[in-house]
Length: 214
Ligand code: SAH
Ligand code: MG
View (cartoon, rainbow, N blue to C red):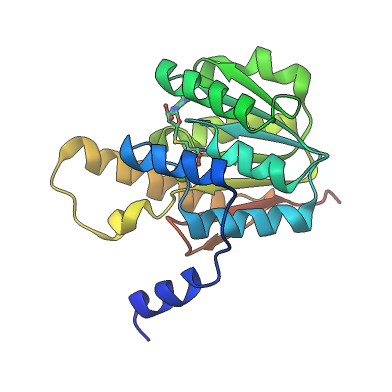
């Protein structure tokens, strides 16, 4: 079984999305906004159905796609999401309003690394979804982990980075980025406070669950 056969097979089971969701997916494609891979998204939604979180913190809203998908799946859940790119913030606001999600999504505008004070009053979170700058995942984790509830889950997207973590990268900046992703993966896998598994789906979805104390 080759990977393409498997991927095609798995894609057969992805359900049709509402027209507005399709519109956001189309916009992302046309404007090169890196929203979550469809299969990765479906997997994350399934984890969330199992966890039934009441509060999620998302780092990296982009145009609001993943936060909108999450709240549509979880009608009793609040999502706090952070984005620093002004055009994307505008688009996220538009789509959050259009999909009727304003009562469930709080969008914080700015750099996630400088937004702790703004996020803190919204804690504790049942899930933290890390999907912002790929070279900063460890810093995001360390900064926001104190706001995670006991039994909380941290989900990190793009940890396989299109398979580049297995390749030799010529470009120096990119090589450094890939090195940081690999370092994060290894660091979190050996973190004594978390049980972590990397799901080889989409662009690599890593699920880390806080260990129960005692
Ligand atoms: N979660 C979105 C996709 C996010 S793409 C979805 O699946 O629909 C990553 C986003 O993170 C980009 O829009 C980028 O602008 C934003 N970002 C990167 N670093 C950031 C930071 N330090 N603070 C806030 N946003 C950041
Ligand atoms: Mg992503």
